[in-house]
Length: 371
Image (cartoon, rainbow, N blue to C red; front, side, top):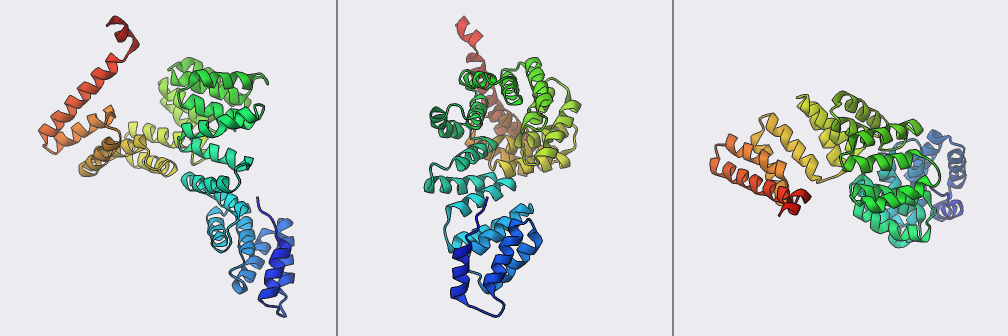
């Protein structure tokens, strides 16, 4: 995911200074080592060159690529950003986005990928990576808007089809999602299709059907992203808390930044009254999806359980400003107010809960039919 602009860098070095140390030869050596996979030596040579020529963006970019190849994404991010501050470059921008992605910093990756798309709207890799990032932060409608025209232009592209189908299912657009699932199934049974079918059934509370499809998905491809997270959610919804814990653990072993697995593992631990451990998972989930209301509610619940009443109140009040129909948050806030001896405020929250519950019941199809 990088390029070696050898001649351009050599010209820069030659124009900057020609010494007995021969920076041109050192650069050639660094690039040769890099291409040969001898990353430690290449990194050392790049750093030596940068000590003399700190403003040559291509050298910094190469150093960032070598660091990323070693899995040192945080250090790579620093070098890519320094390179871009000296010389804007779409490929370096994409490399920076990839480093953020590998670090699990999806909002930052999205910001960089959107820049790449502005400069190169036809970049397929940037489009797919951006769609994946949107999925990971829960912006399903953004994925749909991004990939619907792409699928129309390239209907046989499996990556586009799968990402779009995933977004449609998670957005509750099950009919449209089923169309995509059927297209995937035309190529035979697959883990991807089973995961989408299992997710669809999970969202309509068909837990038995969801478990069957998700178990089959795992059999077909146990390394498929999200498969253990949704299998764990199906198990948890079916009352198998221990099985769910094992599934979430498996997902987090493969992807420590999986949002659903972090959130649900926190829920399981909170149910076990292990609030300290639960809080760590909730905080990590919040890093993946900053501002997520569900996670913030869970954190407030931990604070309330730990007797941190004021902190819980502030968090719940903040959540309800953004989501005034969040019933569970109103219930918890009523509890907080009663603990603070604010009976009138507590009663007000209980009244709101009663009204919201009544409105939800009135919107049920069976109730509407009886009216």
